[in-house]
Amino acid sequence: MSMMRFQPAPFFANKNRAFWNLQLAGWGGAFLLRAVNALANGLPYNLLLVILVTTITGFSLSVILSVVYRQLIDRSPIVTWGGTAVSLVLAVIVHAGIDAWVQDLYYAGSSETSFAQRFVGITYIPLTLLGGWSALYYAINFFLTVERQADRLERLEAQATSAQLAMLRYQLNPHFLFNTLNSISTLVLLKQTDQANAMLTRLSGFLRHTLIAEPGSQVSLAQEIETLQLYLDIERMRFEDRLRTRFDIDEAAMHACLPSMLLQPLIENAVKYAVSPQEDGAEIVLSARVVGQRLRIAVEDTGPGVEGPVQLSMLEYENEVAGGLTGRPVSTGVGLANIRNRLMQGYGDDHLFETASQPGGGFKVLIEIPYETEGRSEHAAQENRAAAPSRAGRRERTPRAGSADTAGDPAPINLNPQHAIGNSS
Image (cartoon, rainbow, N blue to C red; front, side):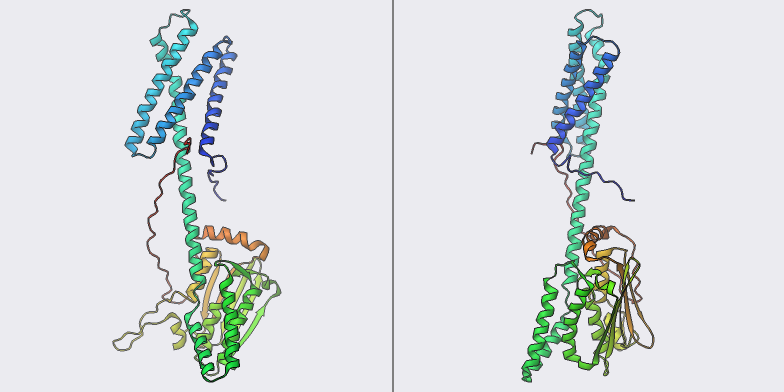
C-alpha cells in the first residue's frame, strides 16, 4: 500500500492565495464558534460586535506575525524559535490589551472588574488562538518545504535515471563498428564495390534504427527483431555460413514491449565469443515466451561457454605481467553489464537476469520482465523508472565473477527552502 503524500498543488500552488484563504477560513471559523457559544448561552446580540472586534484584532496581528515569521523561518534554530517566542508574547499582550479595553467600553462601568483583572482573565484566549496559529503556520511551511525537497530529489533522481539510460543506450560497441568499417575498407581495396556498398547500406540502416529511438524508449519485440536482422545481415557478410541463427518467438510475445536495443548486445556477444573464435562458427538461438504476465526471453549459442579461454575474455581477464598468470576478472561496463543496468533502471527488482553455461560449451542468457503491450507500456515504464532508484532488492542472479557494481558518492544537493506561504512574490 502506497503512502499518501502531502501534495503542494493545487491548493498550495499559489502560496499567497492559500495563505489568505486559510486566514479567512480560520478566523472566520473562530468568530462563528465564539458567536454561536455566546448566543447559546443567552448573551446579548450586541456582544457579537465585541467578538467581531477581537477577531479582527487577531486576524490583523496574525498577518503581522506572518511577516515576522517569514523573516525568521530561514534563520538558525536559536534565532527562529527565540524570535518567534518574543513576537508571540508581544502579540498576545497587544491582543489581550485591546480585548480588555473593548470590554471596558462595552460594559461601561456596569462591572466592577478592573482593566488589569480583565487583561489577566482573557489572556488565555489570544494565547490559545495566536499560539495555535503560529504552530499551524510553521507546520504547514515545514511540510511544504519537506515536500518541495522530496519533489526536487525525485526530479533529480529521474534526471539521473534518464541520463543513465541514455548513456547505456548509446554504448554501441566500438569493436563492432570498427570491424564493420574495416571489412568495408577491405572490400573497397579488393574492388568488390557491390559488396562494400551493400554492407555500407546495411550499416547505415542499422545505425539509423539505433539512433532515432529516444533513450529509454520502448519498442515491440517485433521491432527489436527487425533491428537485430539489420545487425545480423552485416555480420553475415563477414562470417557467411559460420553465423547461423534461429528465432523461436510466440505470436503473443511479438507484441510485448521492451527497452529498445536491449537484445543487440546479447547477439553481439554471441557473435564475438561464439561464432568468431570457432572455425565452424556457431548457432545463435533467440526464443521468447509469454508466461502468465511475464515475458521470458532467452539467447543461447553453441560457443565454447565460460570454460573456454575466448569466452572468458567476455569479462576481460587481466593478465599478470610476472609469470603470465591469469588475474581476476574485470567487468567492462558494456555488454551483459549494460543490459543488467538497463533492466535495473527500467524495472527495479521486478525483473530476472540470469546467465548459464554448461561445461561442454554453450552460453545462455535468460531475461524475464513484466509483459506489457504497446498500449500499457508507457505508463508502466514511467512508474518503474520513478520507483527504480529507491528499490533495494534485486532479483538478478549472475554467476559471473567480478560483476559487482561500483558507484561514487552522490554529489551534495543544495536544498534551500523557498519562501513561506503568504509571500507575495
